[in-house]
Image 1: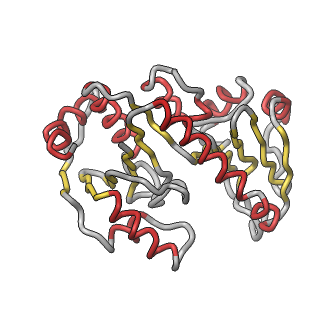
Image 2: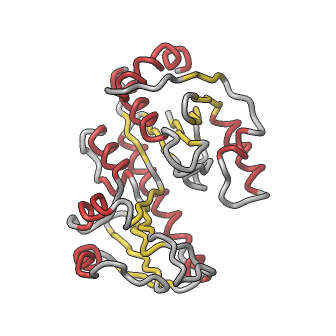
Length: 265
């Protein structure tokens, strides 16, 4: 079973919490399951502790993926659960981001190989020695404009396809997490059973096939589709109001959703 969690808010909509709750429920039901975040990112200024932790291991990944790694009993490399990770820098008045977004580098994992895409428009804002290990462990590709980025698009797609193939061969169920308020985390995603769209206090559940059909319609208008644009075209199977919880949030949401999930699955 393939399940997608996407959000209606760019930040803090609850995607990771919901994904972990679904993983917990499915594991309790005897399913082998993992969380999968095809694309993720950290900001070097706002998430320095997390950035440092992963750089010391010669790679880069985020806090959310670490949680999926732990929840899946550490049976799959963390960079397979998150094959593409972007390291952002805060936007600066000193740099005009006309050609490329404000990122320092991308880490792409494909099979046994790690690539680092370096944005040459962005100077390293901290001592470059912090990056010695990741640069030593990776094949480096330098880009300077949008055309350079477009020429390696296939590398990003191949990475997601490879990771998905590895996970689908090992697990009964995969719970995808999208990023920000984007409707689909990966353009190659073509099989979904259910889509859970979350915002504070509410979850909407959609049939996967209809959600993907809505994506095809929206893709003719915009490349990066917002979740809100997709769900405007379809009706949910159901919607569930979620109260706030102060502690043991994953466990309490799992218990709260349990009767709905039993009926749905």
